[in-house]
Length: 106
Length: 106
DNA sequence: GCAGAACATGCCCTTGACGTTATATAACGA
DNA sequence: TCGTTATATAACGTCAAGGGCATGTTCTGC
Image (tube, helix red, strand yellow):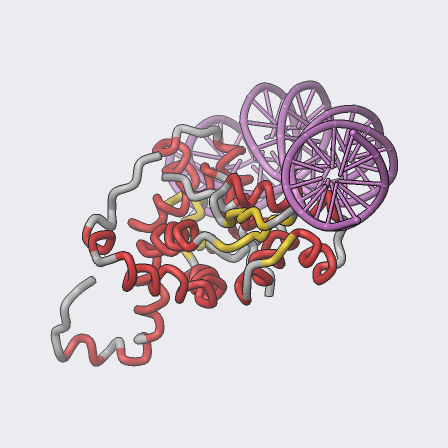
């Protein structure tokens, strides 16, 4: 079930995803806003597409790229088994109170 | 605020984190359970340590590695702006996905 | 059909990750 | 102190990601 974090590892790809968060974009829009070369944008988009984080919607001779929620849900799902850690830590100040009253365990 | 996903990208490191989820381990325990070489374990642990995902607690001549919740909280925080996407989708597509949540084998 | 726009891909080079073996470092026990 | 245990680092070869430039490919409108 190895989540593909490699696609998220590159800063340019993180920037692309952040851009697409607002709304879908064409390649050239990303090229302009991120100030990268067009081939580089296409290559990073390919990585993101192969990893399932984006989809390309053909639109005339352009291709509008959009986020694919399922991929992000998988990341969240991967993260889920670790969630108790920092949530418990937030309750750390009340750790002593935990002894007095019994709560349900995760 | 670029989250360091590179550390999470490698399958061996994902395995290490999964092991540490149960309880802290020494290097040799990880070597045995993951069936990797000792230098390799040390190197991957170094990457995870530099990225903040684990800490080494000296214990006699051993070093017990433990997860560091803050790093995972940062990942969750990075993911937060994307959360609305699949949560909205769950409302639209249905709650069936909510029940078959732990079914995924690529 | 043709020209141009919008992307994708191929090729080349550089750099760095990964894994292995060998060796260094540090702490413990006798 | 000496040997052993436990871990870290060094040195080295391999291989693929990343970025550049150049070239395909596909669609559109004239």
